[in-house]
Length: 282
Ligand code: C2E
Ligand code: CA
Ligand code: CA
Ligand code: CA
Image 1 (cartoon, rainbow, N blue to C red):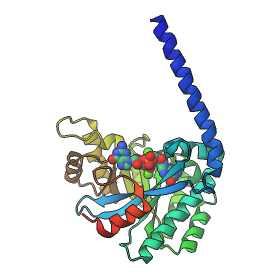
Image 2 (image 1 turned 90 degrees about the vertical axis):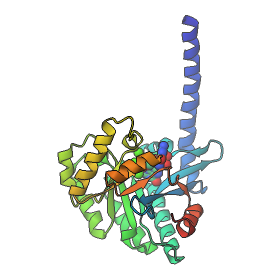
Image 3 (image 1 turned 30 degrees about the vertical axis):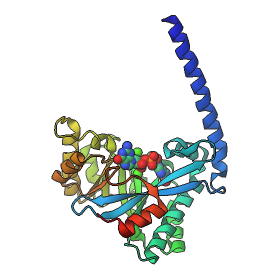
Image 4 (image 1 turned 180 degrees about the vertical axis):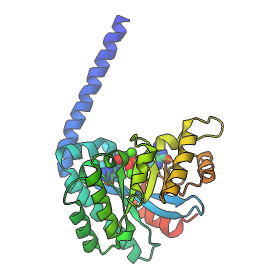
Protein backbone atom coordinates (compact mmCIF):
# COMPACT_ATOMS: atom_id res chain seq x y z
CA UNK A 1 0.00 0.00 0.00
CA UNK A 2 2.93 2.26 0.75
CA UNK A 3 4.56 1.70 -2.63
CA UNK A 4 1.28 2.40 -4.36
CA UNK A 5 0.96 5.62 -2.41
CA UNK A 6 4.39 6.70 -3.52
CA UNK A 7 3.64 5.97 -7.16
CA UNK A 8 0.42 7.90 -7.03
CA UNK A 9 2.35 10.79 -5.59
CA UNK A 10 4.88 10.70 -8.41
CA UNK A 11 2.22 10.56 -11.09
CA UNK A 12 0.44 13.38 -9.33
CA UNK A 13 3.52 15.63 -9.23
CA UNK A 14 4.58 14.99 -12.82
CA UNK A 15 1.07 15.66 -14.10
CA UNK A 16 0.99 18.77 -11.92
CA UNK A 17 4.20 19.90 -13.58
CA UNK A 18 2.70 19.49 -17.03
CA UNK A 19 -0.37 21.40 -15.92
CA UNK A 20 1.76 24.16 -14.41
CA UNK A 21 3.92 24.34 -17.52
CA UNK A 22 0.88 24.44 -19.76
CA UNK A 23 -0.68 27.24 -17.74
CA UNK A 24 2.55 29.21 -17.97
CA UNK A 25 2.91 28.60 -21.70
CA UNK A 26 -0.73 29.42 -22.40
CA UNK A 27 -0.50 32.72 -20.60
CA UNK A 28 2.42 33.99 -22.64
CA UNK A 29 1.02 32.55 -25.89
CA UNK A 30 -2.40 34.12 -25.32
CA UNK A 31 -0.81 37.55 -25.63
CA UNK A 32 0.04 36.75 -29.24
CA UNK A 33 -3.01 34.70 -30.10
CA UNK A 34 -5.04 37.64 -31.38
CA UNK A 35 -2.44 39.01 -33.78
CA UNK A 36 -1.52 35.51 -34.94
CA UNK A 37 -5.17 34.90 -35.86
CA UNK A 38 -5.42 31.84 -33.64
CA UNK A 39 -8.77 32.79 -32.14
CA UNK A 40 -11.96 31.77 -33.87
CA UNK A 41 -15.66 32.02 -33.13
CA UNK A 42 -17.82 28.94 -33.40
CA UNK A 43 -21.60 29.18 -33.48
CA UNK A 44 -24.08 26.86 -31.83
CA UNK A 45 -27.67 27.14 -33.08
CA UNK A 46 -30.62 27.53 -30.76
CA UNK A 47 -33.89 25.97 -31.85
CA UNK A 48 -37.54 26.59 -31.19
CA UNK A 49 -38.99 23.58 -29.36
CA UNK A 50 -42.28 24.02 -31.21
CA UNK A 51 -41.13 24.45 -34.82
CA UNK A 52 -37.61 22.99 -34.47
CA UNK A 53 -36.33 25.91 -36.56
CA UNK A 54 -33.17 27.86 -35.82
CA UNK A 55 -34.12 31.00 -33.90
CA UNK A 56 -30.66 32.19 -32.84
CA UNK A 57 -27.11 31.17 -32.07
CA UNK A 58 -24.50 31.49 -29.37
CA UNK A 59 -20.97 32.55 -30.30
CA UNK A 60 -18.37 30.44 -28.49
CA UNK A 61 -14.67 31.19 -28.68
CA UNK A 62 -12.03 28.66 -29.76
CA UNK A 63 -8.26 28.90 -29.65
CA UNK A 64 -6.36 26.96 -32.27
CA UNK A 65 -3.01 26.59 -30.55
CA UNK A 66 -0.09 25.37 -32.72
CA UNK A 67 1.22 22.95 -30.06
CA UNK A 68 -1.68 22.19 -27.72
CA UNK A 69 -4.34 21.96 -30.41
CA UNK A 70 -7.82 23.26 -29.69
CA UNK A 71 -7.69 24.84 -26.23
CA UNK A 72 -11.08 25.03 -24.55
CA UNK A 73 -12.41 28.41 -23.38
CA UNK A 74 -12.83 26.88 -19.93
CA UNK A 75 -9.03 26.77 -19.83
CA UNK A 76 -8.04 30.15 -21.26
CA UNK A 77 -10.92 32.51 -20.43
CA UNK A 78 -9.93 32.43 -16.73
CA UNK A 79 -6.33 33.30 -17.72
CA UNK A 80 -7.63 36.11 -19.93
CA UNK A 81 -9.69 37.43 -17.03
CA UNK A 82 -6.87 37.30 -14.51
CA UNK A 83 -4.40 39.06 -16.80
CA UNK A 84 -6.82 41.66 -18.14
CA UNK A 85 -6.44 40.31 -21.68
CA UNK A 86 -10.19 39.67 -21.61
CA UNK A 87 -10.74 43.34 -22.52
CA UNK A 88 -8.99 43.03 -25.89
CA UNK A 89 -10.32 39.54 -26.52
CA UNK A 90 -13.83 40.59 -25.54
CA UNK A 91 -13.74 43.46 -28.04
CA UNK A 92 -12.57 41.07 -30.72
CA UNK A 93 -15.40 38.64 -29.89
CA UNK A 94 -18.09 41.32 -30.09
CA UNK A 95 -16.71 42.81 -33.30
CA UNK A 96 -16.30 39.45 -34.98
CA UNK A 97 -19.78 38.24 -34.03
CA UNK A 98 -21.46 41.50 -35.13
CA UNK A 99 -19.52 41.76 -38.41
CA UNK A 100 -20.25 38.13 -39.17
CA UNK A 101 -23.95 38.46 -38.43
CA UNK A 102 -24.26 41.59 -40.56
CA UNK A 103 -22.39 39.89 -43.42
CA UNK A 104 -24.79 36.92 -43.27
CA UNK A 105 -27.78 39.25 -43.37
CA UNK A 106 -26.29 41.18 -46.30
CA UNK A 107 -25.77 37.87 -48.09
CA UNK A 108 -29.50 37.17 -47.76
CA UNK A 109 -29.42 34.53 -45.04
CA UNK A 110 -32.33 34.48 -42.59
CA UNK A 111 -31.75 37.19 -39.96
CA UNK A 112 -31.23 35.74 -36.49
CA UNK A 113 -29.90 37.16 -33.21
CA UNK A 114 -26.48 36.03 -32.02
CA UNK A 115 -25.55 35.86 -28.34
CA UNK A 116 -22.15 36.64 -26.94
CA UNK A 117 -20.94 35.75 -23.46
CA UNK A 118 -19.98 38.61 -21.17
CA UNK A 119 -17.45 37.55 -18.58
CA UNK A 120 -18.35 38.40 -15.00
CA UNK A 121 -15.36 40.69 -14.78
CA UNK A 122 -16.12 42.45 -18.06
CA UNK A 123 -19.77 42.95 -17.24
CA UNK A 124 -19.02 45.44 -14.49
CA UNK A 125 -16.49 47.56 -16.45
CA UNK A 126 -17.49 51.16 -17.00
CA UNK A 127 -16.80 51.33 -20.74
CA UNK A 128 -18.84 48.24 -21.63
CA UNK A 129 -21.79 50.21 -22.96
CA UNK A 130 -19.66 52.60 -24.99
CA UNK A 131 -17.76 49.66 -26.42
CA UNK A 132 -20.96 47.90 -27.46
CA UNK A 133 -22.44 51.06 -28.99
CA UNK A 134 -19.22 51.68 -30.96
CA UNK A 135 -19.24 48.18 -32.36
CA UNK A 136 -22.91 48.34 -33.32
CA UNK A 137 -22.26 51.65 -35.11
CA UNK A 138 -19.17 50.32 -36.84
CA UNK A 139 -20.78 47.09 -38.01
CA UNK A 140 -24.20 48.65 -38.72
CA UNK A 141 -25.86 45.67 -37.06
CA UNK A 142 -29.37 46.33 -35.78
CA UNK A 143 -29.09 45.97 -31.95
CA UNK A 144 -32.01 43.57 -31.89
CA UNK A 145 -29.70 40.98 -33.45
CA UNK A 146 -27.20 41.18 -30.58
CA UNK A 147 -27.88 39.34 -27.34
CA UNK A 148 -25.70 39.09 -24.27
CA UNK A 149 -25.39 36.16 -21.88
CA UNK A 150 -24.39 36.91 -18.31
CA UNK A 151 -23.94 34.16 -15.75
CA UNK A 152 -26.42 34.10 -12.92
CA UNK A 153 -23.67 34.49 -10.30
CA UNK A 154 -22.42 37.83 -11.64
CA UNK A 155 -25.97 39.19 -11.69
CA UNK A 156 -26.32 38.60 -7.97
CA UNK A 157 -23.41 40.81 -6.96
CA UNK A 158 -24.16 44.51 -6.73
CA UNK A 159 -27.85 44.92 -7.43
CA UNK A 160 -27.85 48.66 -8.05
CA UNK A 161 -24.98 48.61 -10.52
CA UNK A 162 -26.18 45.41 -12.17
CA UNK A 163 -29.70 46.75 -12.67
CA UNK A 164 -28.47 50.02 -14.17
CA UNK A 165 -26.28 48.16 -16.70
CA UNK A 166 -29.15 45.81 -17.61
CA UNK A 167 -31.53 48.72 -18.06
CA UNK A 168 -29.07 50.57 -20.31
CA UNK A 169 -28.45 47.51 -22.46
CA UNK A 170 -32.16 46.91 -22.88
CA UNK A 171 -32.73 50.57 -23.74
CA UNK A 172 -30.40 50.12 -26.73
CA UNK A 173 -32.49 47.14 -27.78
CA UNK A 174 -30.15 44.35 -26.74
CA UNK A 175 -31.73 41.23 -25.27
CA UNK A 176 -30.31 39.80 -22.06
CA UNK A 177 -29.92 36.14 -21.15
CA UNK A 178 -29.23 34.88 -17.64
CA UNK A 179 -26.72 32.08 -18.24
CA UNK A 180 -26.13 28.91 -16.19
CA UNK A 181 -29.36 29.44 -14.27
CA UNK A 182 -29.70 27.16 -11.27
CA UNK A 183 -26.02 27.17 -10.32
CA UNK A 184 -26.00 30.48 -8.48
CA UNK A 185 -28.39 30.00 -5.57
CA UNK A 186 -30.64 32.88 -6.49
CA UNK A 187 -33.87 32.29 -4.66
CA UNK A 188 -37.04 31.95 -6.65
CA UNK A 189 -38.37 35.15 -5.12
CA UNK A 190 -35.26 37.13 -6.10
CA UNK A 191 -35.93 36.21 -9.71
CA UNK A 192 -38.99 38.45 -9.55
CA UNK A 193 -36.76 41.51 -9.37
CA UNK A 194 -35.38 40.64 -12.79
CA UNK A 195 -38.77 40.96 -14.45
CA UNK A 196 -38.38 43.25 -17.51
CA UNK A 197 -34.61 43.21 -16.91
CA UNK A 198 -33.85 39.71 -18.15
CA UNK A 199 -35.45 38.49 -21.37
CA UNK A 200 -34.43 34.86 -21.23
CA UNK A 201 -33.28 32.27 -18.69
CA UNK A 202 -30.86 29.58 -19.75
CA UNK A 203 -31.30 26.55 -17.52
CA UNK A 204 -27.89 25.07 -16.79
CA UNK A 205 -27.01 21.82 -18.49
CA UNK A 206 -26.40 20.07 -15.16
CA UNK A 207 -30.20 19.99 -14.72
CA UNK A 208 -31.04 19.25 -18.35
CA UNK A 209 -28.76 16.23 -18.63
CA UNK A 210 -30.50 14.64 -15.64
CA UNK A 211 -34.00 14.99 -17.12
CA UNK A 212 -35.48 11.53 -17.43
CA UNK A 213 -38.82 9.72 -17.48
CA UNK A 214 -37.60 6.59 -15.76
CA UNK A 215 -35.17 8.04 -13.25
CA UNK A 216 -36.96 11.15 -12.08
CA UNK A 217 -35.01 13.26 -9.58
CA UNK A 218 -35.21 16.90 -8.48
CA UNK A 219 -34.06 18.05 -11.93
CA UNK A 220 -37.43 17.32 -13.53
CA UNK A 221 -39.28 19.24 -10.84
CA UNK A 222 -36.78 22.12 -10.84
CA UNK A 223 -36.93 22.49 -14.62
CA UNK A 224 -40.74 22.39 -14.74
CA UNK A 225 -41.06 24.90 -11.90
CA UNK A 226 -38.49 27.31 -13.34
CA UNK A 227 -40.14 27.30 -16.75
CA UNK A 228 -43.51 28.11 -15.21
CA UNK A 229 -42.09 30.85 -13.04
CA UNK A 230 -40.08 32.37 -15.93
CA UNK A 231 -43.18 32.49 -18.12
CA UNK A 232 -45.08 34.11 -15.28
CA UNK A 233 -42.33 36.78 -15.23
CA UNK A 234 -42.54 37.19 -19.03
CA UNK A 235 -39.19 35.54 -19.65
CA UNK A 236 -38.36 32.93 -22.29
CA UNK A 237 -36.46 29.80 -21.39
CA UNK A 238 -33.60 28.08 -23.19
CA UNK A 239 -32.58 24.60 -22.08
CA UNK A 240 -28.84 24.10 -22.49
CA UNK A 241 -27.06 20.84 -23.20
CA UNK A 242 -29.99 18.90 -24.67
CA UNK A 243 -28.53 15.62 -25.90
CA UNK A 244 -31.43 13.14 -26.16
CA UNK A 245 -34.89 13.05 -27.69
CA UNK A 246 -36.20 12.01 -24.27
CA UNK A 247 -34.96 15.30 -22.81
CA UNK A 248 -36.49 17.18 -25.75
CA UNK A 249 -39.86 15.49 -25.26
CA UNK A 250 -39.88 16.30 -21.54
CA UNK A 251 -38.97 19.93 -22.28
CA UNK A 252 -41.77 20.13 -24.83
CA UNK A 253 -44.21 18.87 -22.19
CA UNK A 254 -42.97 21.55 -19.79
CA UNK A 255 -43.50 24.27 -22.46
CA UNK A 256 -39.82 25.19 -22.70
CA UNK A 257 -39.34 27.73 -25.52
CA UNK A 258 -35.90 27.00 -26.94
CA UNK A 259 -33.21 24.37 -26.83
CA UNK A 260 -29.50 24.29 -27.51
CA UNK A 261 -27.44 21.12 -27.46
CA UNK A 262 -25.64 18.32 -29.22
CA UNK A 263 -28.97 16.65 -30.08
CA UNK A 264 -29.39 19.15 -32.92
CA UNK A 265 -25.91 20.64 -33.31
CA UNK A 266 -22.56 21.16 -31.63
CA UNK A 267 -20.89 24.57 -31.90
CA UNK A 268 -19.58 24.76 -35.50
CA UNK A 269 -17.28 27.07 -37.51
CA UNK A 270 -18.77 30.10 -39.27
CA UNK A 271 -18.86 28.63 -42.78
CA UNK A 272 -20.64 25.49 -41.59
CA UNK A 273 -23.11 27.57 -39.63
CA UNK A 274 -23.86 29.69 -42.70
CA UNK A 275 -24.56 26.51 -44.68
CA UNK A 276 -26.84 25.25 -41.90
CA UNK A 277 -28.73 28.56 -41.92
CA UNK A 278 -29.09 28.49 -45.67
CA UNK A 279 -29.97 24.88 -46.39
CA UNK A 280 -30.21 22.93 -43.18
CA UNK A 281 -33.56 23.87 -41.75
CA UNK A 282 -35.42 21.10 -40.05
P1 C2E B 1 -21.42 28.41 -21.53
O1 C2E B 1 -21.63 29.85 -21.88
O2 C2E B 1 -22.33 27.82 -20.52
O3 C2E B 1 -21.47 27.64 -22.92
C1 C2E B 1 -22.09 26.40 -23.11
C2 C2E B 1 -21.07 25.30 -23.19
O4 C2E B 1 -21.76 24.06 -23.28
C3 C2E B 1 -20.19 25.37 -24.44
O5 C2E B 1 -18.90 24.89 -24.08
C4 C2E B 1 -20.88 24.39 -25.39
O6 C2E B 1 -20.01 23.85 -26.36
C5 C2E B 1 -21.32 23.33 -24.40
N1 C2E B 1 -22.46 22.54 -24.89
C6 C2E B 1 -23.47 22.93 -25.69
N2 C2E B 1 -24.35 21.94 -25.91
C7 C2E B 1 -23.89 20.87 -25.22
C8 C2E B 1 -24.37 19.52 -25.04
O7 C2E B 1 -25.40 19.11 -25.57
N3 C2E B 1 -23.62 18.71 -24.25
C9 C2E B 1 -22.47 19.13 -23.65
N4 C2E B 1 -21.80 18.26 -22.89
N5 C2E B 1 -21.99 20.39 -23.80
C10 C2E B 1 -22.70 21.25 -24.57
P2 C2E B 1 -17.58 25.69 -24.48
O8 C2E B 1 -17.73 26.26 -25.86
O9 C2E B 1 -16.44 24.79 -24.19
O10 C2E B 1 -17.56 26.91 -23.50
C11 C2E B 1 -17.39 26.72 -22.11
C12 C2E B 1 -17.56 28.02 -21.37
O11 C2E B 1 -16.52 28.94 -21.70
C13 C2E B 1 -18.85 28.74 -21.71
O12 C2E B 1 -19.92 28.18 -20.98
C14 C2E B 1 -18.51 30.15 -21.30
O13 C2E B 1 -18.64 30.31 -19.91
C15 C2E B 1 -17.04 30.24 -21.68
N6 C2E B 1 -16.94 30.89 -23.00
C16 C2E B 1 -17.02 30.34 -24.23
N7 C2E B 1 -16.90 31.26 -25.18
C17 C2E B 1 -16.77 32.45 -24.55
C18 C2E B 1 -16.64 33.81 -24.99
O14 C2E B 1 -16.64 34.12 -26.19
N8 C2E B 1 -16.52 34.77 -24.01
C19 C2E B 1 -16.55 34.45 -22.69
N9 C2E B 1 -16.46 35.46 -21.80
N10 C2E B 1 -16.70 33.19 -22.25
C20 C2E B 1 -16.79 32.21 -23.16
CA1 CA C 1 -23.31 31.05 -22.51
CA1 CA D 1 -24.42 28.15 -19.90
CA1 CA E 1 -21.18 27.44 -18.16
